[in-house]
Length: 296
Image (cartoon, rainbow, N blue to C red; front, side):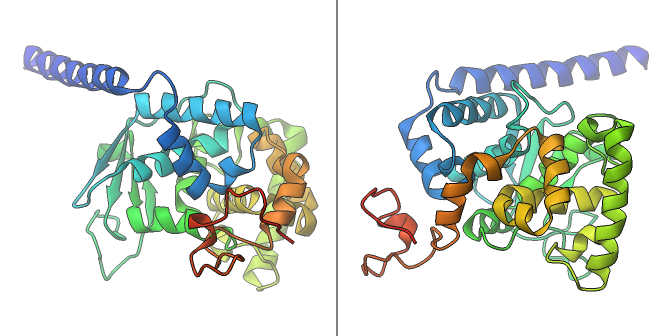
């Protein structure tokens, strides 16, 4: 029996190693221009970066796709899907050089929402994203339509891909408890927990612009607040300066400070808005990359 288990573990390890080596072999040495254009069209966070930061982001994309499989379950997976998943992974850890997720080897894309039993289009539960545990340890499940909606609507402060990868980042210190490793120090942890409880009370009373799902518990508060931080950093800094300051420490990023002018421009015109040139096309498919366009 023991020898059988050893053989099974060897075969699993060999399969994982072979799969990893195949991904490495298929990965381009340089970031392809086609990939770059997809990021420029689909990922606002990438649009706000300067040239050096974009290079860092692209390296993070390549590193993630080398380490993690992306598999479709009853749905096809194309290049845009892979780049949106990888972007969701890179954004929360952009402030941590050479980061890789210790607890992840595969992301599963589903064609719709699912439930705790992984049944698709369940009428009992509507789950859009989940970090696996138990038999699903090392895996993440994302609804493909929800993943895309997170990038199509940049005003709603919600992005399921970023949300789930924040949970994984939270897990890196050994526990998904809503306290990022950078805030584990007492001088940060105590103010962080007090802030969570204060904000949760306001959310439950309907007196906060933070998604009320964040009031579920501390770990969901971190993920929801993190979505807000990455989607609308300047607005979060304006409306919740204390929360913004602690999240900037937690994620090692200060996007509102670095990209305030760009964010102010983006606030008036989003990529899925009608193009101001009058073509009838969406802005992202028309003049978004044309520097002659004036945004007010």
